Image 1 (cartoon, rainbow, N blue to C red):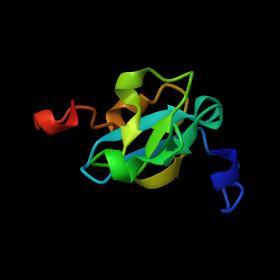
Image 2 (image 1 turned 180 degrees about the vertical axis):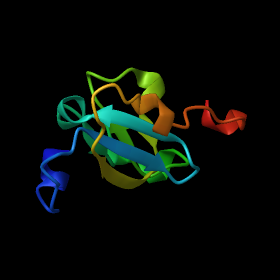
Image 3 (image 1 turned 30 degrees about the horizontal axis):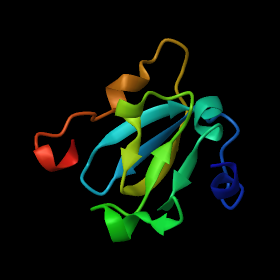
Length: 100
């Protein structure tokens, strides 16, 4: 993630990253946790797109697996004020069993 973020201008008041998938799934992750993670495009030397429906996945040791984002299509910076709930920005459920 730090490599990705180094390529763009990140506002200094950024507190979270909003990661969105190509199907609308969305997780709001604190910057420190996001920087511990990565956007994977391969697993065990194989491109994800060749073995899965999605071509990328955000993963982080500081973020629970149910909040990892498959098929990352967007990353936005967010500046939340103290007391604002980052989960208000999330869409963590999908009804389609294909995404289990």
